[in-house]
Image 1 (tube, rainbow, N blue to C red):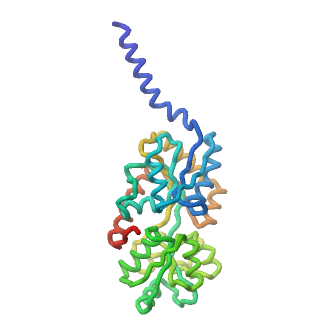
Image 2 (image 1 turned 30 degrees about the horizontal axis):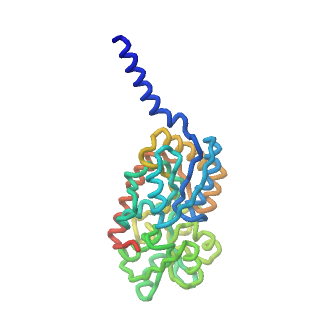
Image 3 (image 1 turned 135 degrees about the horizontal axis):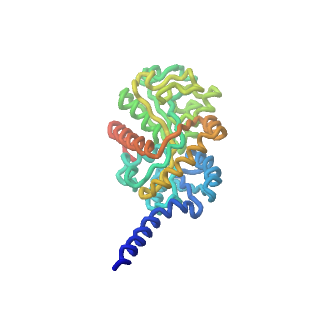
Length: 321
């Protein structure tokens, strides 16, 4: 009878230590960063900037796997069902917060199926035109568009920049303007630079080189404050839309049941990488900014993003194609 308490204590110890073991032995094998889009886009570039240094720090290979399709839904659905052991992470963009509001069949719940690890970087959207159109501000463009048959180009229906233009131009300004979706931000920017479409809406990095080369006239950025490298470009808030702010962000998430210890370790390691001088310079050159953030801060931010984009989808009446 006296041995029973010892047996129970031993069993309890086994339970406690078995629960702690995954965090203590992590990582036990290579880690996959599942990118929700094709190679060459912001999510892919940032995943690859992080991968090697993260692998060096963790002592395991970090493999970047592109699993594009369905506007990012394919990869999100795949990672949501992965083992919650920190060996599979999703690398995605603002589309992750937009898609569930845009389509009831997105295949995942961004708030229930994932644990946010980190917002790796973000960049504002821009609204721009070709210099030959002869407008200097966003309000001048809106006035001109009321008397002409204007169109705007985006990287595709349901993207953040598409929703930005629909909300600012159609919902708030009442413009009858035609959306011309392209297969990516590059082709959309090229069409506007060539004068085939009047307005470009895209993420800043896509338009930066064309703007610096004088091929695109930037009318507004959607950040809260002006971009340091573009001091002459006003914000949307300064252009007739007080308080408006949005961006495209790149984030990393794990399946929802991943232990907080693993999530916090990944957050700390990736924060350190992103704040390194070399990576910060690379991101800045691409038009992205990285600000340190904790996993709980990202979770709070994600809730506000899902609510904000859901509201914009509803008010704009946009439907998934």
